Structures are given as structure tokens and as C-alpha cells.
Amino acid sequence: MKKAAIALTIAASFAISSCTLSKMLKIAKDQKVQTNPNPLEVHKDTVTYTLSGNLPVKLLKANTVYTLNSYYKYADGKELPLPPVPFKAEDNPTNSTQPIAVSKVFSFPYKPEYNPGTLEVEGVASKRGKTKNTARLPLATGLITTSKLVQNSYYVAYASHGYNNKEEIVPVVIPDFLFVRGKSELVKGELKSQKALDLSAFIASKNVTRTVTVTGTHSPEGLERINSALSQDRAAAIEKYYRAQMKKYDYKGMADSIKFILKPVIDNWDGFKREMADYSGISADNKAAMLSIVEGGGSFEDQQKSLEKLPYYTKVFNDIYPKLRKASTEILTVKQKKTDAEIISLAQQIAAGQGNDDALSLEEIMYAATLVPSYDEKMSIYAAANKKQASWEAHNNLGASYLQKAISAPAQRDELLAQATNEINLAAKINSEAAEVNANLATLTLLSNNPYKAYSYAAKALTANPSSEVRLGVNGVKGACEIYKAAYSQALSSTSGAAATDVNLFNKGLAQLLNKDFTNALGSFTEATTLNPNFAVAFYGAAIAEARNGNGNGVADNLKKAAAIDSSLKEKALGDLEFTKFNTTDEFRNALK
Image 1: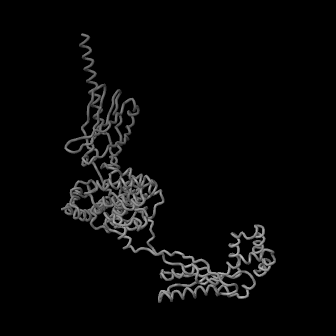
Image 2: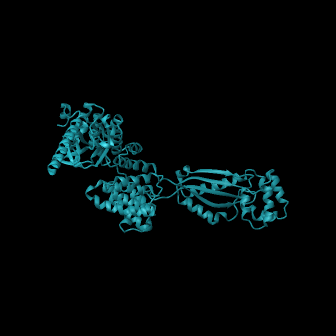
Image 3: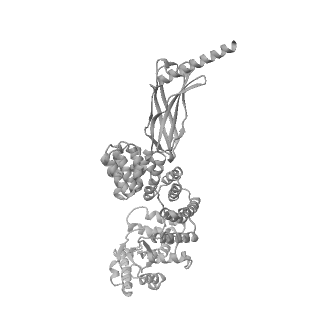
């Protein structure tokens, strides 16, 4: 009897539970839940959405739980179960009079096989181990993968070769020519001195010369002061000698291109003070006394007369004054350099092991590599530079050559990237802060499909005070990485400061599109296709921008252009949820025929 009673009680309990659950499911029909966004979107290799809405009043009964289960269905019935969201009666005591707010963020990693798919939701009412389920209902479609259109932007940075290939003006200073006291006549033997021979040899070599500046001076004593033009005449005497030498060596028209500048120095104590600085013929106190006079004010002649009264003046007059009766000559000449053809030829010989390593400086070898078009030639010359003197610049530029060839030769990419990595890492060991090194590391890691690490290298390169060229290049790499990171505002800033290449303009448009600035996005995509009329994905991006703006004609026109260049975009467009509002129109279908 007792067993029968217990069985009847259990049966009654199940019947009551079943009735309760049935009522809950009936009420659950009025639930209102939705997802944002819908369709679901991929950002940063992740699908993230918010489930929100309300569960009806009086849905939950005592000791019951109502659970929302979500499933993402894709590819032949496969499904990805998502975390359940339970609602317990005891946690929602106001449900008897108020609906239950639903707000839950979900995310799952993106896989290409997840597209296309559908997000479904079902309700599960449960009490004391017994459950009843609602039918599964579609809640959202997926996936919009527009963010995956990002194009890798690569930039290869070469360090400066350090060679000045422009015209350089260098000064040639001729030792002072000394003159007879009170005259513009050279001291006996000056024209046979080594300095005269050196000047004559310089003129004979016919160096390209811009200016010859001759500064004539006089000593301070009275006899010198009689002829106020003495300094000018001494400068003119050297000019006369120089011109005579040019005539001797048959300068002809070359002489007309040389400008002579004569600078007479009159009533000036600077030369005297310079000579006195190193003079040891009198005591320090006596030197100080003389300097005190010339720096104490008054006329030049009065200062000279005061010096003459000093007991040690005669010694200074004999030792120092003759050195002040002179003319100083400075020649500005064009530095002799090898021609580019000579530098290339010598560098190629050195690289082939057939030339003298000392025939070129390191800077000239590095410069030679910039003059040859072939990546292989660049590599051999930069390798020769490393043999001459290993430096971060030489390692970086050798690595940059490997990297640049890897970008243009996909078939050899793995081998070339390994060589580039080795050289650029060697450069980094020497100078890990160099902007060029970090720029190349950014491109290397992006080529290796690691945009997050590439971003860190790009950011580091930009903090290293790069040149404007490097900044423009690195901003393109950084902008692409920021789109991968779903940092769209930052990507827009980076790409706006990047070199105006077709890829960077496309990524700028994509960043604007993902920032919901559809009009400007269309403008950037148009700039990209203007620069590169065969850039199919840029036309595709323009079609998406037109779809977001609701312009069906623009969608069809741009898809037609994209598909004409890349036929694979036809199938992509037919399944792309960006075009849901347009894909049933004749315009759309005709564009993809």
C-alpha cells in the first residue's frame, strides 16, 4: 500500500511538473530576443554579438529554470553550441509582474567553414530534472566577412648608404704668403717655397674651382699705416700670381668660371691677438699688458703708439709683426669623385672577388648597390659591404634586398624570407632601435601572417624618429595590422598618413567602411582604382560601400568591374550578405553573368 502511494505521489508530481513546463513553453512563445548585429560579422578573427530582449511576464514558476540555448549551424548540418543562458525563478522574483531583461555577449573564433551559417535559439524549461524544449528558431544569419578584405601593405626600408653623391664644395687652404714690410712685394724665396709649389700643383691639376678668396693684412706699426691700400694690394698680388699660373697651364675658358674675392683687413688686432696666444717670447704678465692696451679702446694708431713705449715691444715687433704682413688664400673647389659608372664597375669587381677591396669606401659600396636594378646584384654588393665592414646598415640593406625579392617572387618566398630574417636579425643585434630595422621586421612578420607582432614592430619604428619616407611606408603596414586588430579608427589615422599606394588607399577605404563612414569609403576605393584600374578587390569594396549607401546601380556597376578582372569575385558576391537587399534584382544578376 505504501509503495503504491509513493508511486502515485511521484506520478502526480511528474504530471504537475509536465503541466508547469507546458505552461512555461506556452508563455515563452511571447519572448522577444534578437542579436546585434544581424547578420553576424567577423572582426579580429572573432564573431561577437549581443543577445538581447525580454522574456515574458510570469514565465518562471517556483523551482523552475528557463534556459536560452544558442547554436550556430553551418556546413551540412554541423553546429557550434554556444554557452547557455539560464534564468532561475529565485533569481527573478519580480517576473510575476515584470518581463526579464536579456543581455548577453557571445563570441566564437572565426573559421572560413562557418560561412554561410545561421544562428538558432531554443528555450528549455526545466523543473526537478524534467525538461521541455521549444522549437529552434533562426535568430540571425552569418557571416559578413568584409573585415577580411584587408590587404597586406608591405614596406621595405633601406638604411642610408652614407655616401654624398651630390656636388660637394671643399676648402683648400694655402699657407700664408708673407710680404716685405710696407710693400705688396713677397718676401724673397716665397715663390720658391713649398706652399708656392703646392699652389702651382693645385692649379696645374685643373680642379673644378668655384671661388678663390684672398685676405690681405698689414702689421700695426706706423710704416704700414702710411699706405692704407696695402692690404688690398697684397691680396691683389696673390690674385695676379694665381691668374698667371692659370694662363701657364692653359685654363682658357675655365678661368672665367672662377670668382676671385679680395678681402683687405685694415686696423684690426685679431691677427695680432692670435699670434700672441701661442707666443712665448715674453712673460705672461707682459703679454697681458700688451693685450690690455689693444683691448682697452682708443684709436688704432694710439694703441700702436702705446705698445711702442713698452720695453719689450722691439722683441714682439721682430718676432710677431712679420707674420702679420701676409695674404691668406682659401680656395673652394669641387670635391673629386668617381662617376656612378666607375663606382658600379668597381663594386661589381669587389663583389665578384676580382677587385681591390680598398678601391671603394664602405659608403661607396653601399651606394653602388642603389645604382643597380637587379635584386641579385644588390645582394652581392651588400654582401661585399658586410665583408668589408659589418654594420647594421649593411646587414639591414642586404636583408631588405632579400625581403623585396621575396615580395615579388612568391615561388622563392620561403627561402628568401629565411635569408632576410637572418640578416635583419643581425642588424637588430647591432641596433635594435633603428627605424629601418623595425620597419623591415614589421614587414617580415606580416608576410609570416602575424599582424599582431608586425604591429608592435611598426609602432616601434615610428617612435624612432624615422625619415618621412620611412614614416609613410610604415604607416601603411601599421594600418593594415590595425584592421586585423579591429582597431578601425587607428587604422584610418595610420592609412591617412601612409604613402598613397593603391593598397594603402584601399585599406583606408576599408577602415572608413568599417567605421561606418560609407561616403568617404567610396571615395578612397575610387582613388585606389584610379591608381590601379586592375585592382579588383577595390571595385568590390566600392560595391559594398554603395550597398551600405543603398545605391543598387552603384553596387551593380562596381561588381561588374570587379568580376571582369577577377572572376572568383562573382561567386563571392552571390553569397555575400552585404548584398542581401540587392541580390534578387536583375541588375545584380546581370552584373555577375
